[in-house]
Amino acid sequence: MTTPARTTSPALPLRLGVNIDHVATIRNARGGDHPDPVRAARIAAEAGADGITAHLREDRRHISDRDIRALARDIELPLNLEMAATEEMLAVALAHRPHAACIVPEKRRELTTEGGLDVVGGCDHLVPFVERLAAAGIRVSLFIDPDSAQIEAAADLGVPVVELHTGAYCEATGAACERELERIRYAAGLASTLGLECHAGHGLSFETVGKIAAIGEIRELNIGHFLVGEAIFCGLDSAVKRMRALMDKARAEATGRRTA
Image (cartoon, rainbow, N blue to C red):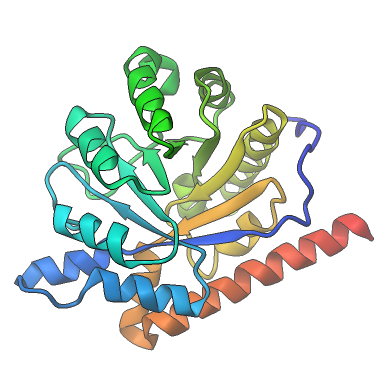
């Protein structure tokens, strides 16, 4: 596989979006108001996050409508609303006008998002959602697997951003890990060549983030479950700061190699 020619500079900064869904999961386990996702978003901002991500699921298993209202109203960082392509979720997005909306696949029984959106097969269904979100001034992204056909379909659909699913890479070992990493590198290069801003996320940890952060075409990483889990041991502030430092170090080293 030959990586497409790069059209974005590897020196471009890499943003960190912190997903605060599982702060709400902990709150909901007992009920009440603690811990507060808005407080978590503020801590993440102070620790170096560039944006906040929240996934309003159809079953409301973690983030609630009240949380989205509060986040849209009370935080200063850009809010990225992850949402299924349904009329209910579209109404929420149009009501609160987040900075961005990332359309994701959603299955009621899955524990976490299991794969990328099928843009190729679902293009006709996605068109009105993309158009209505964009008309409201909301930046639209599609959460997809690092697959050429899906990236090309996203470009044809006219979205400005794709987010590559990194779950398979994070779960792979040995030679399979390198194969998955090369898929992501190739997909990021293709997305850039087609004029799409490329983001990535899902399953990233302190151990796996470096090689993804080193891919110059990727402009943003969205990380949540790992950071909230790590916060139990070291605090959210410390977890976000360490992730930010690892991302910045990997990007700086990769930039140095390319310009040497």
